[in-house]
Length: 264
Image (cartoon, rainbow, N blue to C red; front, side, top):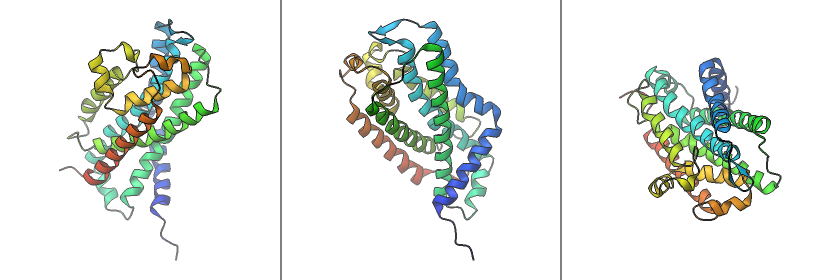
C-alpha cells in the first residue's frame, strides 16, 4: 500500500497543475508577464531625464515596476481569479476531495513565485538591452533583492488569497481589485518620484507594503547616494522587513480564518 502523500507533496503537484492551466490562458499570460515590460517601454521612452546624479528615470522606474510586479502577479491576480474559481464551483469540488486546503494554497504560491521570476527576468533583460540599466555588482544588494522577492512574493500571495473574500462575485472582482492596485501604484512612487508626491499621499502609502517594496528595490538598483533623496534620508531596510512581515501575518491570518470555498 502506497503511503499517503504529504500536504506539501500534494501542494507541489497542485502547483505544477496551476502552472499548466495558467500557460493555456494566453491572454492572461501576455497581460501578466508582459504588461510591466510594456509600461517600462512607454515610460522609459517618454521620460529620459536624469532625476539625480547617476540615476535615470528608467533606472528608478525599473525598481518600481519590479516591486509593482510582485503586487500585480500575486495580490491582484489571486484576488481576481479565486472569486472566478469560486463562482465556477471549482473550489467547492476541490474542497470535496481528500486534498488538504494547505495544498491548494501551496499550489497558488508556486504559481505566483514562478510567474514573478519570469516577469523579473523580462524586466531586467528589457531594461538592460533598451535603457542601459546597470545591474548592481555588490553581493549584499543581491542578497537584499533575494529576500525582497521571497518576502514580497509571500506577502502578496497571502494578501491576495485573503482579499479574495471581498468581491461578491468573480465578474465584479476586477472592478474591486484593479482600482486599489492602481491607486497604490501612484501613491507608492512607482510612476513618480516618491518624495515629489504630496505628503498626505506619502503617509497613506507608508501604511501599505507596496511603498516599502518599491523603496527596497530602489536600495538594490540605485546607488547608495540616492538614499539621501528618500523621505527618511535612508533606505530603512529594517523597517521594510518588519512592515512586510506584519502584512504577511495579516494575510495568513485572514486566509486561514476567513477563506470561502463556495458562494454564500
